[in-house]
Image (cartoon, rainbow, N blue to C red; front, side, top):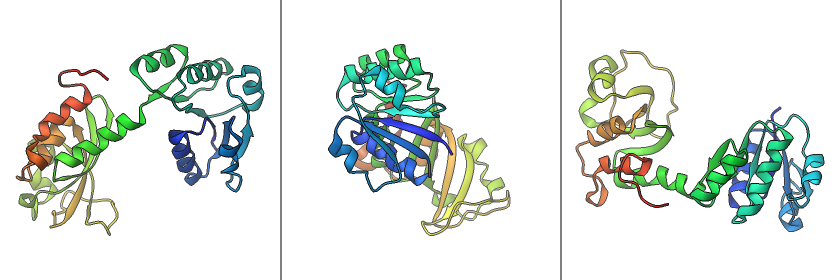
Length: 242
């Protein structure tokens, strides 16, 4: 069983905890606020009330062989920097830390964070495309320009086989799976599969390719926005201040 520790239980830390519990992971939570810890006394977690900023106490509290740690000190920038540094010294291989600002993130990288998380910003990047496109159902930036998206299959593809639609040649997207409506589950398919009305496609591709495929619905994006402007959200447009 994988072992993780969550240092600090602000909003992000609590949400990570809930997800880890769904995965049946072994989780240790540490926070100096006893009321916060007591809220999880009936959960299958190990819990310690402790000041995370005491390096020796933290070193004794964290078990050897941890697979990773999540650090969420709320808005306490200095505290998260110190906790990150301590975890690096202890030798924890994966250190995920919530950052507040770009400057904060830069320092976290310097002291050993392996992954910086901006929860609100990342949530916005996933939600905004759904607001401005009627075809997109889910939108997940993966790395660089690579995106995985869930979207309605355009009506003009209904009746065409996967071979006939040739999504890779016409749109530059790769079909991962397909299902019909919300009740059906994603599954395996063959090149002879023919798109049906109500089909939902799970595809991967560049931001531009996903945009083109979503725009192929032939319907205007909400509020008159152009879906192609979404590329600005992912660092491919004019940079704005954070």
